Image (cartoon, rainbow, N blue to C red):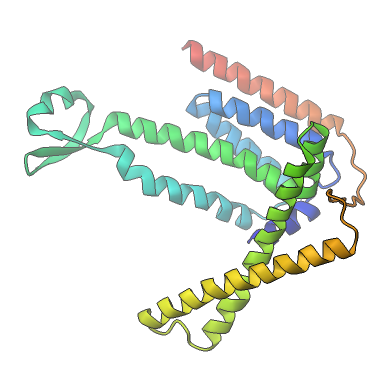
Length: 265
């Protein structure tokens, strides 16, 4: 999936659009989503999905798979948000907040109205924010993001570390995939005990091979006269789009106006 995401970042329909324009647009919506009410957050998530799927040409199936990940995390935290419990003698304190509940050993467990509202608010904010991050991740290559960070004054040491971390994520995933396929072909996960043993071997080999890859990268950098800064070649010439800029500004203004009306009400 990570390799596919990186490929899409280099091949999407908005590839030639200036990265700064896309990044500022996503950041503006991210700020609005953190300050807005749920209806506006839902509109932001839908609008960013339109930009990602239709404007950038990202396959809807891949995008929905990515959206599915934060939804799963939200679902796992849902019981902790919705279900509350108090001592049975304190029932009168939470009676107005209770939808339904039951007595268990002197305690009253109940589904909270406030908890449901809080869970809904977290969900809309998370979906709006993650849609902005996915737009950046799927339309702007990581090297272009690093170039922008350098222009705004981020230290070169940090950008180089980010580039190395990004590189080794793919090394780690490729190595893990190769080892898992090799073990799977030898029926290494046939039983539970065998699966645990195979998993421990995979982790050990993964650590060893990652260190070996790191040594190879270090030697190759030294042999090429590395001077402390990575130089990335860019073959694309970007352009600013007036149409997209006008659409983005008008959309943000409409969202702010809607948020103002909701806040007043």
